[in-house]
Length: 503
Ligand code: CS2
Image 1 (spheres, rainbow, N blue to C red):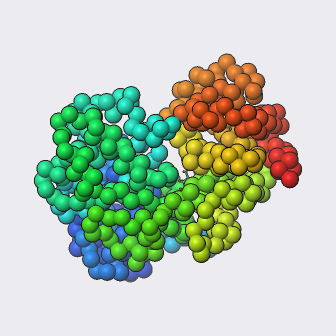
Image 2 (cartoon, rainbow, N blue to C red; image 1 turned 180 degrees about the vertical axis):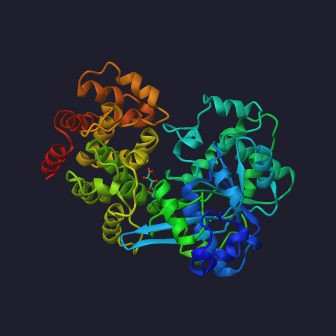
Image 3 (cartoon, rainbow, N blue to C red; image 1 turned 30 degrees about the vertical axis):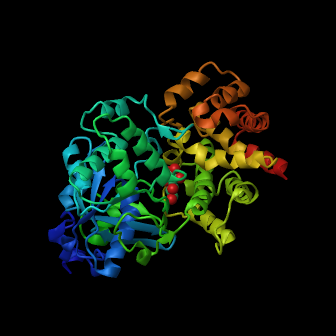
């Protein structure tokens, strides 16, 4: 009774747990959970994905030693949301069938990584910590996409290397591991959960690059090679930014106020390379797939889901759609991504044995069309320079190498080019360019007066396109063709034309 008609201004925390309707309570008693995981980059995605899997694994086994110390990278927002709530928050699952709430109790501590570096390093060095997970977004790694190594010209990386309390992710990871080695706290596994190809190997490489430049840490790289594992992963769950209406709905469902609500679709998937230095949560008991080879899953997801997502985001935003679910029903975009997946992406994939790719693609289209998810096109359009290579350009490269025409993929790249230069959509809504390369993009296109000049200027950004695609005449012609159409004729007629030409 108290939960349903209680004081709605009361905030979720330990003391309010007993007021919650039993169906929404955490799967384990959070007061009994102890820390076992450090998570770098605690945003909405971690809370709706890995934390949910971990809680289900703890509930399935009764091993409650896998609570999360969540580190926020820059802003203190998550600390302010979760600390007063004893780390508790709600996952609001939205689908056409309605909304369901589940309170999650796995996050046991939240630390502002920018101002409390000492706690971050101490947690990485604690013997009870056996796993470090990461979701810091593509740009958070500060790597050079062209060679996959740490960007040693990045001023933050340089500052970390000369010895300030580290603020970059790689700096915190390496200094934490150094502390762990000194404390003789034992082996540990670093699980990258960002949408990057071969993400485990990538983090291992960046850690190595940082270590190579630390004159004061002899032997650290060898210790890491022996004691630290970096499995690759494929992570999947669509998690749009929560808004006031979501928090209001949670208040209604819980009878309590929750400032830390995250919104998610019902679908969730996690494929993890089974390569751990020590213990781990029984994530397979929570529906995760542990496998020897994560690469086929990862490429499939990055090219089919994320490639389509970016296509819907750029072209949808250009057509004036605020949300992905609208974009997929507008201007022929649904058919475009369907054909993009079937005709261009699928031939480049090595499908894991026994995996039903037809069903996977059909479900993807349904997930994009979920009317209850208000996933903003401009949110996904962010950081295109960091996303295009693994989402679209790999497909283009593979098709070109095979002598095939990446017409639809190139059209999607043209959508990005139009998005970053158009300023406003067809319905005059603003198209923000939120990207670490925004300054370079603006500078190289400033005096480009024709689609050809824009196309060449942007293809010249070899940190995105590499030397190969920048110089590929077939690719250039296809992208330019798309960009000319989008510049002159709008999204819907351009899609019709390109689909006709693609046959
Ligand atoms: C999206 C992803 O924001 C984006 O760029 O494409 O976050 C996407 O929602 C997830 O990868 C789904 O697993």
